[in-house]
Image (cartoon, rainbow, N blue to C red):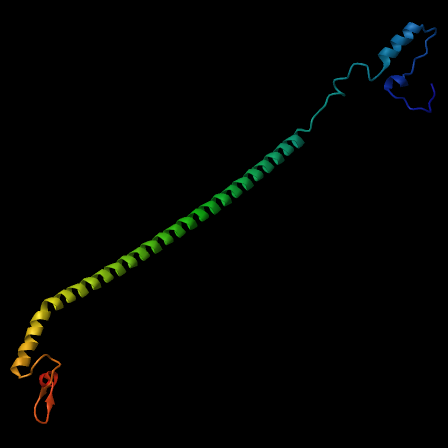
Length: 173
């Protein structure tokens, strides 16, 4: 074989030991057992020894990242809960404010109605009292007009030679 082309497999680079008269069979057997890729492994040199400290460090870093991620999620969840609580408190406060305003308006409306009703009742009682007292007043005025010598009603004057007197002027004296 030529040395110009690199071997594709270790078996291609097999060097046969010179035998006096090697038989083709022995050459095949020698080629088969002399390939380093095909030969049994040496447990001392071919054992994989993992670097435990780097694996532990990677696991610790992964655990730290996971804890940090969980902490961020927990912080974000707390922020969301805090925001939701604040919104709920604001809604409750707004509802409470609206309820107080509604109660105050209802109270002022009720007081205004009560005041209006009281005014109406007072006016009604005043009118009733005036209606009850009206005949008595008319009788008193009629008696007064007769005593003073006026004829007719409160609008009719009393005439003498040179003067005219009305009942109202006489009453004012």
